[in-house]
Image 1 (spheres, protein in one colour):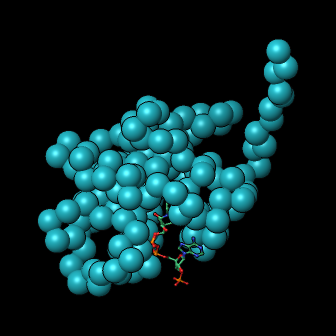
Image 2 (cartoon, protein in one colour):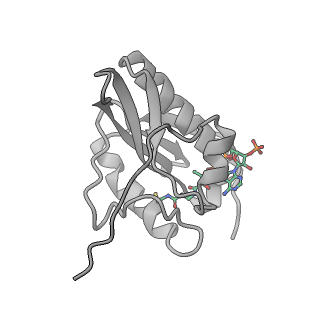
Image 3 (cartoon, protein in one colour):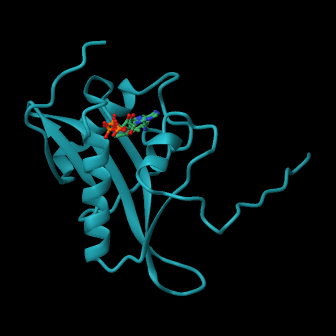
Length: 151
Ligand SMILES: CC(C)(COP(=O)(O)OP(=O)(O)OC[C@H]1O[C@@H](n2cnc3c(N)ncnc32)[C@H](O)[C@@H]1OP(=O)(O)O)[C@@H](O)C(=O)NCCC(=O)NCCS
């Protein structure tokens, strides 16, 4: 895989015209390198909010994306932010684009009054867990409970 040097990478709020580029990144991330924690934006509903979701652009194409939303946290009623999708084109990984996207999202969430950011990541997700650990994310005090429904 040819790794490109991102000489000029622009991070800006996502626009409608970016959607094809975002889906193209998702297609390139198929296979073992894909995060197992995120929904598939092609088959599942992932609706990053306009005004909070960002793309990274280089050489006139989308090379990275972060989508998320602001929500009301229970039980405090305070505002929080959820990251729903994060992906960097494999050809552009390892050049700080992922960090820039998360920082842009974080700054915007802060401006919109969010008190914290959350992301659902499976502990065995080697594509994402070490990255978010490095960004200062810690295990939340909420635990997801589940019960298998036998037929
Ligand atoms: C996780 C991801 C966003 C990181 O993007 P990136 O631009 O390559 O990350 P950065 O260059 O900003 O790396 C920041 C740090 O995280 C580390 N890092 C990134 N991915 C890592 C991984 N999988 N394991 C260990 N460390 C990782 C880097 O080494 C770097 O550390 P350093 O600053 O000490 O050198 C990218 O690997 C990715 O897109 N993964 C697949 C996600 C996916 O499948 N999404 C769903 C489809 S859209």
